[in-house]
Length: 105
Image 1: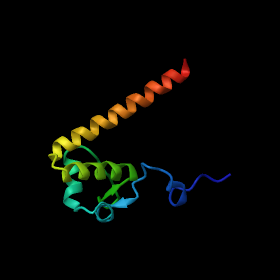
Image 2: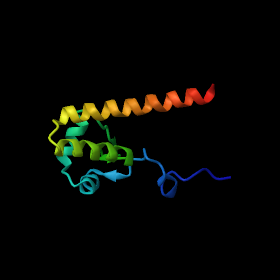
Image 3: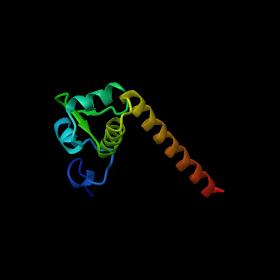
Image 4: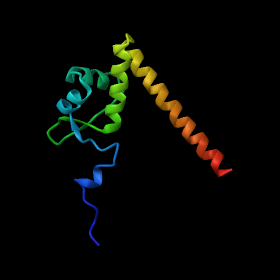
C-alpha cells in the first residue's frame, strides 16, 4: 500500500493547507498584500512560508482576513478588528468543546 500523496487532491479539503500565495490571497479578498502583512503583524494570522520564504495562506486564514476586512471597512480599527476576531474564534472553540463534553455525559 502506497502512502497518501503529499500534494494535489489530498489537500483540497484541508482548510489549513497553505495553498494561496500572498498575491492570490489579496486578489481573492479584494485587498492589498500590505493589508495581509498588517494582519500578520497584528498576530491575527501567521502564514506559513514556502521554501523561498514567500507567505502562503490557508482557506481558514483567508476567512479570518475576509472578516477583518469587513470590520475595517465598517470603520473598526485594525487592531480592534483583530481582537474581535480572535475572541469570536475563542468563543466558538469553547462552545464546540462544551458541546463535546455534554455529548460524553
